[in-house]
Length: 264
Image (cartoon, rainbow, N blue to C red; front, side, top):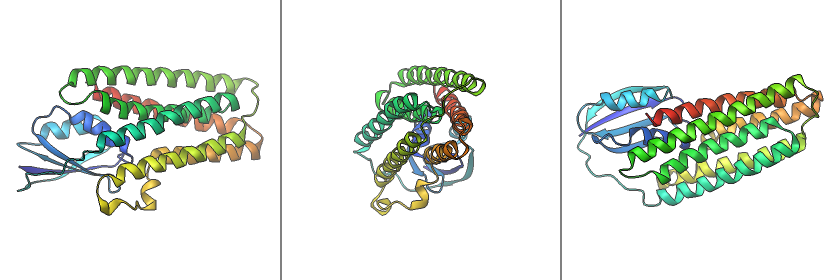
């Protein structure tokens, strides 16, 4: 048995962990995956060489790099029996906030909230694929991943077009109060998801470090929408909302391409 450790610089929340799990699914040499999200490290226990594993990780463009490969005597690994229940929980939270942010974004005319809702939907896709395409259904998993990726890109493109229309047109100011309140709620929801998933790893991580929350892209996006809401009110302009919306749409497209890479 060999143990190969990777550093993955862009692995800052559990959705990236599930993307990596899906990408590595089907490689028979892999016996166990040990994720350390706070330190952005992945330890793979496997038989034989690590070339195929390294290639698959690099294809995701998450900043993966192999650190070490060494022999190990460890052959038994703990199975997390509550993993499926946890995935259902975070899927429900993310999808609920997709609906909430999409509805409030359209009502308040905030592209920042609409874009963030798609980011929540992207995470929902990742957890959903993990749940609905398990075990030996590799072809089914890839088919679902491909559909999810293209659907996500389509929504993001529609969002870009709407941003351009609003940028060059005379549009009413978004409701900054709704932007801030809903984003704070989404921030709390992301923190809860990250807490639940990290708590499941081991008892030692039950009390999650505060710094761990703020390494998440999702949380940074929430803070960005809150900041945009404050700037909308201060500058009396919709431009901050359109700018943050554009940035998040770009991130959504990047996430979609990562999902598509899982389908290859």
